[in-house]
Length: 354
Image (cartoon, rainbow, N blue to C red; front, side, top):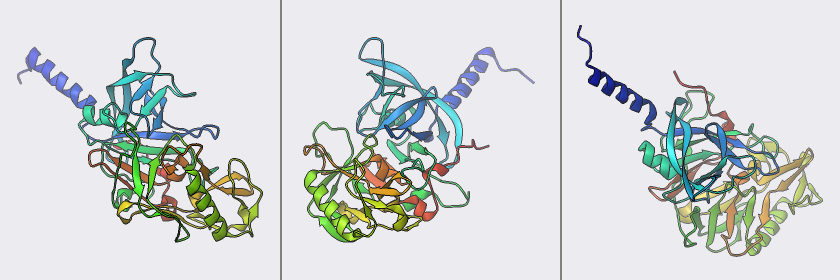
């Protein structure tokens, strides 16, 4: 049998190397929830070192010795939506900036051509869309071990067990259009055209700008909205289980008197009534923060400023939901509280397929 010529052999070797490093399929990474003091969500994207996931940041940032930008090598795994398939490394452009404590930098997820999702889409030839399944730590929230998952580039998203369950992407809401109410702000915003309802009754009426944040721990409400929501929740739940407030929360309760289910504590449901008739629903599992063994508090805070969105949904209220942000279609979609269906964002199967 004839042997390949040297030039052909080199060409075949180069092709095989390209096949190993070019993804053309979505990328998967773990999400780790940090300590209670920061509660930041990170992903081990920089040679296994953590980058903070920030929905409001327009770029990847890392410390640099000089200059304003640098090239970094980032790594993840290709995925079929159910398991990691193979490791992938790729070069990305980063802006020079100090790193948050305990992290190697920031993976900016915002609406910008320099963001992590945009650079993944460009280098890996996948959709500029990503899915976050933020984990609970199982301490302040009901279900989780502090490890979740993110997929960049579209496709299905499966949580185990069992293996024959449908993809949880089938549980996504109808898409809600992304809006841009703040010029130059790379964050993600939608409109709550129906306001906010507590236990099915509108508490804060009118059209409200709603933002999403992975660096704000608990949902922040503009002061006028906050007073209406707090008063309505207080009325709806009543005084039987109420106890003294625990900072930074105003409404706290004896958790032994609340009762619970897979959805968390039996407390009034909070609905953010979004454009198009879709509701972002918050049930007890991520409306109530467990501040100590016997006390749970309504985890909504008054915003310090009135210049931002009326509602800034924090990481705690995003936990154990699949949240999909499609920059190509300019749409947001999300699931309900997954533990109510027997799922958890901590149940992604990170065992390599094959």
